[in-house]
Length: 470
Ligand code: GDG
Figure 1 (cartoon, rainbow, N blue to C red):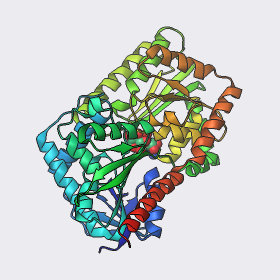
Figure 2: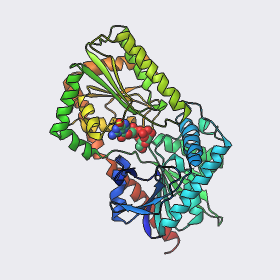
Figure 3: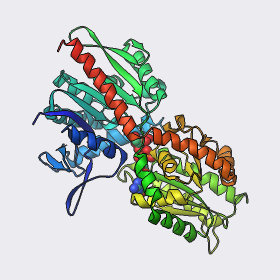
Figure 4: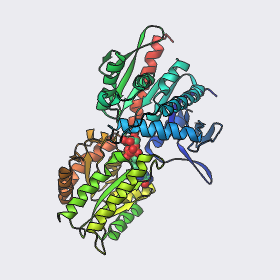
């Protein structure tokens, strides 16, 4: 059925299957887009999350879902291979070594084609299609070729690297051309958008002015693609509401008590090498070794939710983190108190908010991160205006959250000093900083983000209509 005026295209459908059927999956992006998709009678194109599952389009909670089937081998080559072992490490400034394999690339092209075809089939004449993230960078150009009537947006959730790194990619021109099929290309930070524009200038020699890129068209003319920062956010009101619930606050008290009333440092991350978990453990371990912190006074709770467990670098990372945790605990624990509470598990959102409320200090020490939503979630949850956020300058969130304690996580001595400063920070200063952080997150929530992106797309659509004289 090709009648949707708005089509979202993302690697995953916004639903998970349990014993009772399909349920919308929790998460900011889904929360933001679900109402728009429903109101506009739009559609969402994506992989249902299980290999070799051939499904017809179906509806969940009034949202039309268009499943794209992927074989086991395609998941391995496209998703685990090209997306997560080539693009992910390359775009995060080669923190891990990217692998360039031609069979992965071939699968990436094939799978991108399938997504583009499904989106083209779902979209009404002159519809808007909004493509998400690094698994689907070729879809915009494929779509434009199949459906020149569409207005196409793309949002890049992860960083875009500088030319010096990007140029390693054997398919560097093809990927840029893929993205430039979009009318609006959204990035997290201004720096990501300008890295992209610089790569386009150097590799494709297209003319650029401010955020506009002049892209040659098939008929010998040009059109302008916009490459711009639209920093993503969270459903802030949902966090405020949860943090205000008596049972969540009670749970936060319970957590603090069970940790012996000590000062609580907290880390919450997918277990990923971009998040700087090892750096924070090192800094904390050294502070304990040097006697600048005492295990009877402080504890680090590290939630490291399982992630990409079939990709080799993630298996190694888990071993390394778990060895480091064991070393810190082995050196510093007493019979009654443990230095690190390491939780390789996923928790419901209520529990996460209780943890945020229980934490005196939140550690976000990413080595490179598109945005980092955890930093924003911590701020939104601190309805009491207490707590200190330590935030890496290499996370996109650092552009907005200016009153956090800013760190370079590679500089272990400075990180150690920031941890001590956070622990000792007077309540008045905590509150002054936290109020500013919260205002920023509450004013710029996920709804404001999706409104800004969609209105840039609406403008692109108006201009396209004007040009074509309709
Ligand atoms: C990518 C980019 C960008 C984690 N553990 C649990 C849990 N989480 C939730 C967090 C947060 C989300 O997962 C993680 O988001 P991040 O932004 O921190 O990082 P990525 O997963 O790497 O996301 C990133 C983002 O896309 C959006 O554009 O910000 O830079 O890498 O919401 O709270 N949630 C629950 N239990 C857990 O155990 N419920």
